[in-house]
Structures are given as structure tokens and as C-alpha cells.
Image (cartoon, rainbow, N blue to C red):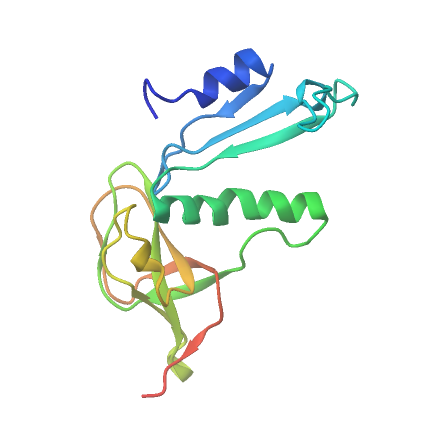
Amino acid sequence: MGELDLLKPTIERSLGGTIHFGRVSMKPGKPTTFATIPSSNIKDPASGVRGGASPTDRKVIFSLPGNPASAVVTFMLFVLPALHHMSGIKPVGLPTVKVRLESAMRCDEKRAEYHRAVVVAKGEDGLWAVSTGGQRSSRIGSFKGANALVRLPTGGGMLEKGTWVDAMMMGQLVADVA
């Protein structure tokens, strides 16, 4: 991101590509980029020959953030659904369920946040989301045990314990044995 980001100019100038977006309003993952380039502009590494595909045939490029947690979250939200779509898998992306927050969580004023959490099935009480702790974009450890990304809305303020939110399931539900 910034002055040293050479990817965007390379895609546009050298590869004749189109940047469809270069930043997203989310936490973590703001510097995510999505672009397409004509297949005819791609060189075969072995032969050095450019592709002969039609001008309308395009290849997709996702440029994910450098921080580990950001890269995983943006992969789950952007790349995985794209791969599902291109492979004909339906529905695309992660399944979403309604959960209740186990503890209060602060919302960002301007960006939606995808909070790493463990979704626990509590019998008659339904599904509850438990935070995995610190959510900095560099904290890959926040994925340890996480089976979901809880979507916290924009607008600031606190969501109280018991508030219903959407959770995108990355893994299996955990059963509460208490």
C-alpha cells in the first residue's frame, strides 16, 4: 500500500489490466485489490510466448493484504467465493448463521469488522459467538480455534452481550459440554 505498491501500476500499464477496486471498507483487510487482465497479455513462462486467447478472455488477480489475519479474512471473503463461482460450486462462499454475542463487542465507526470467533452450540440457547481475543490484523493467533468470522456493523458504539449478529462459518460448530 502507498508509494511502494508497484502492483497496481504494473497491472494497469504493463499488463493492460483493470483495477476494479484497490481498497475495501472493512477490518481487517482494507488494502485488498481486485483486478482483471486480458489473457492475451500473459506470457507463458516456459516459451515466453504471449497467450492467444480472445481479447474478452480475462484472468483475475486478487492482491491480499500483507498482515496474516487480514490475508486470511480477505481470502475467505473474496477469493474463496470467486473460486467457488468459477468452479460451479453452489452456494458460493462461507455459510452464514445467526449467533448471539457471548460478550459485548465494540463496533468501528466507519468500517465493518470481521471478528475471529468460536461459535458454540448451547443446546436450547442456540448458537453463541465467543471472541478469540485480540483482533489486530497482524495477530494470526486469533485464528487458533476460530471457526467463524462474526460480522460487526459500522457506526461505532457497543453491541451488548446477547445481541444477534451474522457469523460466517469457517469450520465445524463446537458443542458446549457444560
